[in-house]
Image (cartoon, rainbow, N blue to C red; front, top):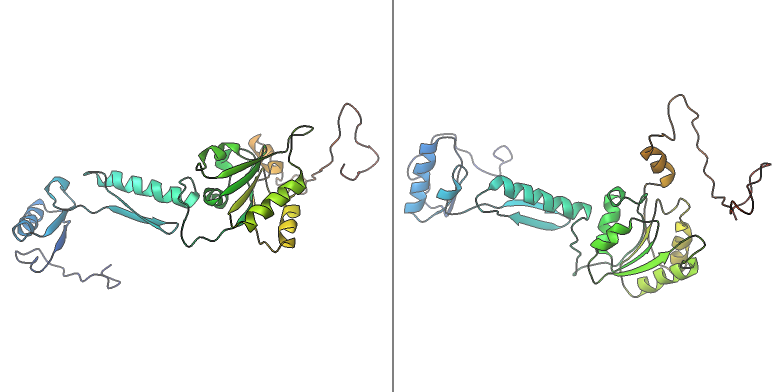
Length: 270
């Protein structure tokens, strides 16, 4: 701070009278006698005094401060500055990664986001995805996304279950598109929470196109696709030096009890 001109540093020992005209003093030398003398002068002249060596002897305490996601955080935990710093760091980190929900209520711009939630573990969603989820008014989720994160949403958030259960309950894609458009036009912030990546077998492009047709912009947040995360969790790399350098994905499905895939060549997805 002295090198950048933020403070003026006079390199000498403390002398009685140095606090004349001050209203706040920070005592932080390594000499206990000097600290006591400066503290005594501050007490005589009714000056706020912070003691880095002895919080009990101080007449003022400086909070541990930090800033994250447009929020300034100041923490005091009694007379334990290291604990204050730890709590501050945890709060700032939570604001940055979205694990602490603090949505804006003024100067807020509604948004629509297609968020890839990764392979299902709530810890594997991206930081940006989690932050957008914390800002949402409406979340349209299906069974493939990290549903544990839905339990962390504030009570006012509307959660729409798109299900997507094979051969079972599901929300038609057209209905999902219409819900995105309806809530966006109502001025709400909407997150479409998907499993994996929105553009890897996720029909995310269809939703983006439906929104674009109505003049609604959307943000696409990539996610960790299960096509690479599941093999990785099993210790199987999808690429490796000395192995084939390409991978093949297929969207083809078939009921195994009724028919099998053709052995003569690829077929179009059913």
